[in-house]
Length: 544
Image (cartoon, rainbow, N blue to C red):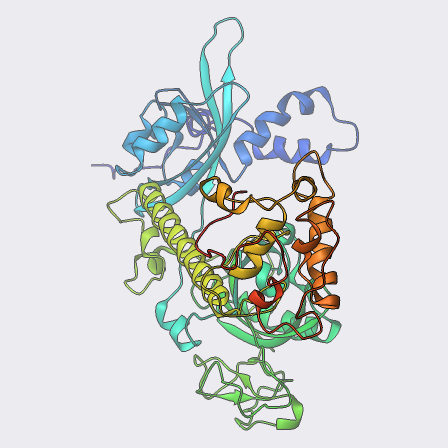
C-alpha cells in the first residue's frame, strides 16, 4: 500500500479572511512606503483597513445588548481567541460573572456623543482572567437607525505590590508620597498628600516628569535607579525635591516595578517617596526610616563601581540616609544590565498573573479570581472613607469648641468703668455688652433713664425733664455720649455725682459735703445726689 502522507493545508486568502487578515503583508508594506509621499488611490482606500487589521489594540463592535458584531485580528494575541470564535457571542460568555452587571448597565445607558469607559475582568481562552479596559462611543447607522458601540480595548495593568517588599523597605508611614510613573519617570498618578508635602496640586503634576522637581545632581542619581527599575528590580535612592516655593527638601524614593517580576520589563513603576524632615544641627536625634542599614547622603542603592559600600555614616555629610532592606549586603551594579529598550533584542514586557494571584499582594481587592465586584468594593470603600472623614471633622470641631470654651473661662473679666473684678452681676453699659459691674451698671441705667417699669414709680420722683432728655432715646442721640463723659470725667475730677446736676433744672448745684475726699465706694459717690434714694436696689434689672 502506498504510504499516506498528510500535508498541511496551504495558507490561502480564504484562511486569512477567516482570521480577519484581508490585506497581504506586501500590500501593507507598499501602503506604508507611500505614506507621506503622495498616497495612491489604493493606499487611501485601504489605509483604514490596514490600521484595523494591524493594530495591537482589540477593536471591537458591540450591540446594545452586548453581542460581539466584529472584532479585530489582534484578539488572537490579546484574548487568545480567533475572530471567528468570538463574533456572534455575548459579552457575558467571556466577562467575569461579578462584573457583567455593571458593564451591561454602562453599555445600555450610553447616549449619542457620550463616551463609554468600562474596566472589567475578561476570560482568555487558555490563560484565565485578566483586567481589560475599553473606551468607545455610540454609533448610529444612517438610514437604518441601527445602533452599535465601537470600542478600543487593551489589557489594563493594575497595581500589584508585595507586602514583604514594602515591610523590608520600612513599611508605610507619614510624610510619604505615593506616585505612579511611567518607565521614563513621568507622573501618571499622584496621591493627594502632595498638597501638604510639596505645596502642589495632584492634577498639575500628572504628565510632568519627576526630573523637573529635582536639581541637576539629583537627576543623574535618579536616572540610574530608574534604569535599574526598568529591569523589574526594586531600587532606592536619596535625592532632593523642590516644592512650589522653591525650597529644596531632602527625600528618599523607593521604586517598585508595577507589573513585572525580576528580569522582565514593567509597563509602569510605583514610587514611594519619603520626605526626610530633620534639623541638621541635631542629627543624632533624627529617627532612621530603615534601622537595618545606613549610608552616606551622597550614595544611592545602586553603586557604579559594583563594590560593597560601608555601612557607616558620615555626620558631616548631613546625617544618615536609610537604605532598603531588600539588598542587605550587596548593592547592584547597573553596568552590563539587560537592555531595556524596545525591539527584538530588548527586554520582554512582563505580566502580573503570578503577582496578582499571590497571597501577599497588597492590593488583594484587584485579584482576578476574587468573587466580588471591584466596583462594589470601591463604592463600599468610598462610603467608609466618607464616614471616617465626617467623624474626623466632627472631632476637630468639638476640640476647637472645647478649646474656645476653656480660653473664655480662663479670661479675667473686670468692669469697664471702675475695673472691679468682683460683682454679684454684670450689667450692660454704653457698649451694649455686659462689661459693667452691678453698681456702675445701675448708675448708668438710671442716668440714661433705663429703669425697669416695675420700679419706675419709686425711682422717678426726683428725676427732672433734663435728665429724661439725656436718656439714650432715638430723639436724643447725644444722650449716651453725654452720660458717659459725665461718668468718666466729672466723677473722677470732682468726686461729685453727675446725678446732682440733672435732678432739678432750676436748682443751683450744691457742693457735696464729701467732695474734697477721695471716693471710698460707689455709695459714697452718690451721697450728694438729690432725688436719689439712699439705698439702691441692686436686684432690679434696668429696662433697655
